[in-house]
Length: 235
Length: 293
Image (cartoon, rainbow over all chains, first blue to last red; front, side, top):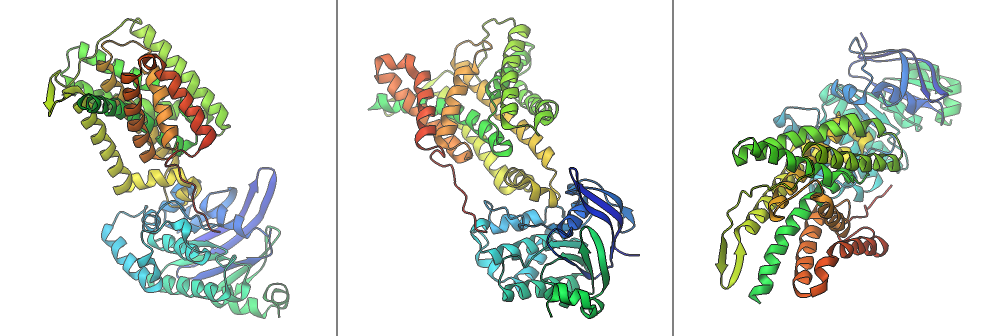
């Protein structure tokens, strides 16, 4: 049984329908990419899962129907790193991380996860009391991932981590995401424009076109698909 | 000199009361972006509840804490039943609702308690101390101590607890807070409850200093609290406290030494609000956030 299962999901912003019957699966311990052009419905797919857009259809997590409110979805163990990173700019880096862990009740787990986090993001230690709004774009994206990690979710939704960042930082972000997921037995659904780096770090992928799934398959299959290669991989 | 110090101490005491009500205003402003004009009347209503409980023979501190509990529930209910229903509207709509609430509470208090002058006993003795020639009233010291204690408890709650952090987060970035599992709408209700408690303490502290009070007890205090909040910066809790104390001391000193000023305290506060909004809209401590994208 897949961890996350979308079956024929629609979503709309007021009168505008953004998703037309999307179906996709994420298995345990998998990273799955969602690729596609601007406006294809990538962000909306994540928002449909976390409940931040009006949706209908079958959405199941661990076999049970997903609740409607974002708070309840978060409490089930789904962490959403949203478009724009969701940084609490006025709060310190430490307070941002504590908010990440808000859904957890185990204090000791927080401390050990923080230690584990420092191995991947050593700069967090010296920036701990700094206002998060003063971090660079790359650091804020890392902090957004770190906040999601601190929740100890079973599934992480990541929206375009590469947006506006240098290629080297993007690679580092994906490496850390992959490593953390493997270490902690989580899964991730990653929306990305940069198809190369995303597929490199994923087991499977979906290509969306105007709110529908156009192509799906393993990372290798997608890389071998000629139209995907031309449109999204650029070679 | 001793005389000046005396005026300063009693200025800090009245400033402490302004600070509490200003804090309540800031608390709600930060989480909803709306100035709650009914804050003073909510405090007045709480004061009457305390008076009623005492009148029915409850011991002072029992009545005091019971009033705070009732006020908390009242604040939460106002948010749930009234503010929540208009929360999706424009700010001006919500502000209008709070002004309506101001009038409603004032009228309700006049109706329930017959608009008569009541006397609220003070929890503090009417003694005075002589500290090196400076005569200090126990009542002033008590007011300062209670205000300070409440401010410190509130500070610890916001800075040191999980729920306090969630409350601040919900005010700063509700969208992102939801994604972290924070129940933002409950946090708003909690904020209203806390603001009502702050107001209740302000009202209970200020009523005995007036000799007697009626349903118009908090109208002038609200103006001073607004002036304090605007002076400190509407989004700054620290600013509200500093603004309240500064305002209390300055008004008291000027009032004591400039004959005609005693009657001009309210217009002066209004003038201050106007001046600050024109010259320095962020107040003394209001922050403009550093944002990098």
